[in-house]
Image 1 (tube, helix red, strand yellow):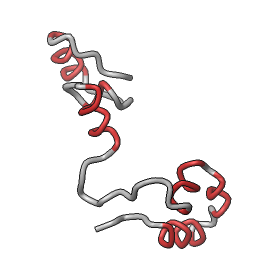
Image 2: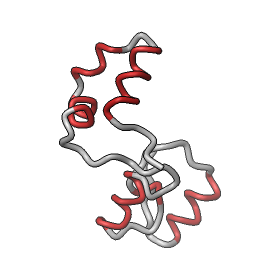
Image 3: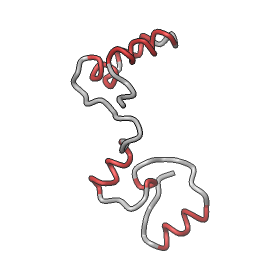
Image 4: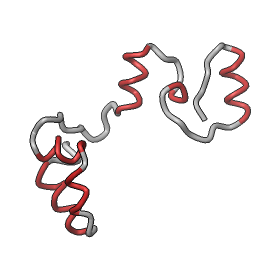
Length: 83
């Protein structure tokens, strides 16, 4: 199942009053057919980066608020999570 294609992107932006977002590179790439479409329920950008960069934890490629216990566990394994 494709979550967003050119038609649904335009429709969603129109419904939310954000048509001006079509000027952004990502939106232009989707509408212009220059970017691949995402498949719902599949691997996302962060997971793809983890694979390409050979990272062990999502926190190494994605900034978030991580619990102290997780940061401590990762630090013991020399895994540096982004904050």
